[in-house]
Structures are given as structure tokens and as C-alpha cells.
Length: 601
Image (cartoon, rainbow, N blue to C red; front, top):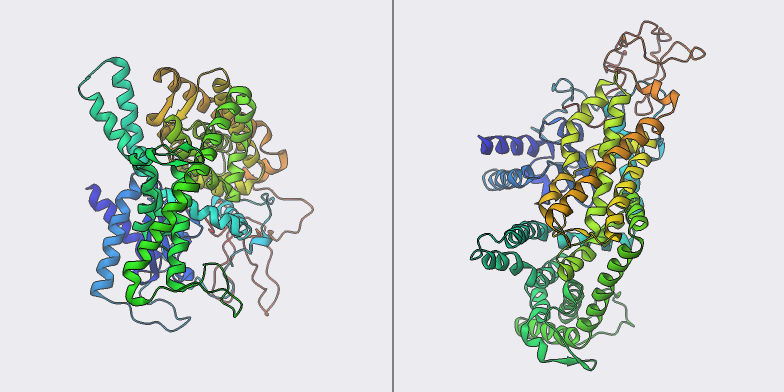
């Protein structure tokens, strides 16, 4: 039954992203189906958001459909199977440039599920340009769809600002570690179970086996990082893994560099990352005769290009030899010092200024996510897990999601008459409790403006609470990265008994929920904005629909709509009864509040 449900979800998703021929790559992370698309115009955002299984969509370097933990791991293979079937049994014919895809379904309205014919006709509402979207909601009857449209526009505008070389590099670094997260989570939970059994004295014969299962992956994580790094940056993956394996080889203990013997694992994931990056450059240099990144001009110094007949022998040999020597006599020592400094600084920071540091980190994490800078923390988390067995930063950063949930609950109570926004919040809250915050961020708090700030305040207070206990000596960490919210409970670990650590983390979540709720409830709206939003845009006869007495009788359009010009036969009759507007003469209905974002699922 579950398999049929996942297959049905995949079958519903595929035509809405342009079909099998429009996909260039299929992957998934903890919560999102990540798709590479050829033609972005073929993707039907509104219809996707209206599907019951879809919690939201995020457009980044790939098109990401938020399905939630567990579901995404089951739906992705079904999508891959359908794509493979479509490509083998019915190769896609070449389409004329600009021609619509035949057989593609019409856009679906979130409210009725019916196809909207003539969506692209003249007079239909157009998408809002990112520069035309205000940061706060205008005084009109606002639906969740309109809020989501503003959030999507803000996301698109922020994405264009994030396309800097540094941030693109950080995004690629994140792509290296994302495929490793399932193994980190699985081994982290096994480590937690092992620790619990060891503390209780239960099953002593099983404890060593569980320790081996939990530690095996972590002892070789450098190899996996090297493999993924070479794959991400265009090298041969196995060569990246080969040079990274030098770092964890036990025999490295017999090598002396900089006057001291090296230790297996010295440098950790940072050393593996640097070694694999160097291996990619050496490999490309062997094949191209030019060091990568330099323009090929007459003055460019060309190195000896490996002849094609000897490429299979010389290129991998030179890559492993040159990179291996640099790694042993340079990178391992430098990366080891950097890794040690990171662990020492994190421990010192939380021991001496834990409350303040937690407050700052928890409050700034949501803005860091928007700026794309949170990806720089992934290698730091992994380094701390290697050194200490857990990362003390992740539980603090997870408090940002708690503040977001508290904010959503306050918005829900403050707008009892706005069924559209309340329905969106109800559908997104379960995912929010599990740490999936995109639907609430880009569908509710961010486009509203002030509630986004109060969500950050909730995260700051929750982070300050966790940081305070770290300062008092009760470290709260996570044995893996990826999960957040309630999903982090099985991975929580610290320097105190597990019960104590779990209680501290739970109290931190409660502080984040409560602070985010209270800050939003009392300071998230001014009187006018609350009155503007507290209407039912789904009911045109709502007597509480705000109206300025000095304004003309014709209803003011929302910024997410384009007003049709009046027919040449005469002016449009003002609508004073609050009834739906009569369709215009061009045949396209002019429906106030047309859906533009998250559907009411």
C-alpha cells in the first residue's frame, strides 16, 4: 500500500516537472528531492505545491521538492524508475524551440484541483518581478498563496545575490557532504544505542559489536570525503578517495614531517578535502597540459601533456604520487593544526561565553541560511564529530527552527479569520516540528516581514539556553548532522548522562517555541497589519475585509496581480457589494487573490 502511494506520488510529480526528458539529474537529501531540469519554464510550480505530498519547493542550484524525511527516500527511486522507463520505451522527440510540451497537464488550481485553461492568455495575472515585491504585506485581503509568492520572489532575489564565487564554492562543499548524511545519522544512532547499553551494563557481549558498527564509517570518513570531492569538482572519484586514504592509513605513524611523527587520521576531513582538490588539479593538468583555472594564451606556460597512449598509466600514477607526497609532507600537518584549532576554539567559546555565543548563533542562523553561508559550517560539524564524537554547534543552531515553529503558532492564533494562511500553517507545522522549516519560512514568516525577525529572536533565546548549559559544564551535542527539531532527539549526546542531555535539549526547544510565540504574538503585527490580514480572502462577502473610507470604490489589486485594462466599450462598473468580479471581455477571468504560491493542502 505504501509502495503504491509512493509510486503514485512519483507519477504525479514527473509530468509537473516537464517529464522525463526535462530531467538531467535526480538525487535526494534528508527532506528534498533534488532535480536538475533542462527547461525551467516547463516546471509547474503551483501544481506541484498543490500536491498533498509536497510541503514546498525551493529553487537553488537544483530544483528541490520538499517531501519530508522518510518520504523522499521512498519517492526518489520511484521517480528514477519512471524516468528510466520513459527514456527506454519512448525516447523524447525533438521539440521546436518555444513550442509547448504536448501531453503536459494544465496547471492545477490549489483550491479545486481543476485544470485552468488559458493560463497564459493575455490578461491573466503575471508573476511578480523580484524587485517589485515589498518586504511586508500590503493592506489587502491576503492569502497564503500570495504570501508564498512574495516569499518565493524574496528567495529568487536572494539567490541572485548569492551567486558569488565564494558562496558557489561553499555550495559545492555542501554537495560533498550531503550524500554522507544518511551514514552519519545511522552510525550516530547506533553509537547512541551503544552508549546507552554500556552505561546500563546491558548486553555486554553486544556492546563491542555495536561500537565497531558505529565507528567503522567515521574511521574511514576521510576516504568518502575524498571520493565525493573529486566527483564534485570533475576529477576521477576513486583517485580522490585514494589520496584521502593516505590520511587514515595506520602506517602513516612511521612517517615524520616537520620534526614530528604523523598520526593516522591527522587532518581529518579537512585534510581529505584539500588532498582531493589537489588531486583533481593534478589530474586535469596531466590531461590538458595547462594548470586548471588559467586561460590558455600564448604566454601561458604549458606543462608536459601526458600522451594519450600513456594516459591510462601515467595520469593516475602522477596524480597519486604528487598529491600523496604533498599530503604527507604538508597538508596533513596543516589540516591537523586547523582541525585542532577549530575544536579548541569551539570548546573554549562555549565554556567561557556559551550563553552569549548560543544567543548569537541561534539568532543569526536563519539569515545565514538565506545568505548561503551556513554551508561553511558543514566541515566544521564533521570535524567536531571526528574529534569529540559530537558537534556542540548543531543543537544550538537547531533552535532557529524552534523559533520558527513558535512564530507560526502565533500567526495562526492572531489571524483566526484568514483560512488560507491558517491552512498552510497547519499543513507545514508537522514538518516544522521535525526540523523542515522552508514551508514556514518562505510561505509565512519571511513575506510577512516582522514575524521573521521574531522567529530569529525565538531561535536566539533557545540557542542562548543551550549555550548556557554548555557554559555550566553540561555539553549538548549531536552525533550526526542533518536532522533538527524533534528528529534530533535520537542523536543527542553530551558529557553528562543521556537523560540529562535530552532534558536540556528538550527545554531548549521549549524556550525557542515559547519565545518565538510570545515575540510574534505581541510584537509580530502592528494594529493595521493585523486588521488587514485578519480577513477571509476565500469569502468575498466577509464584512471584515478592510476598506479605506477615503479610497475609491474599485478594489485595489494586490501587487501579485496585473490589472486588466478596461474594455474599450466603456469604464468598468465599480463593484461595491464584495461579489466576484465579472469576467473581462478578453475571456480571462479576473479573480482577486489568484493563487501564486503554496496551495492549501
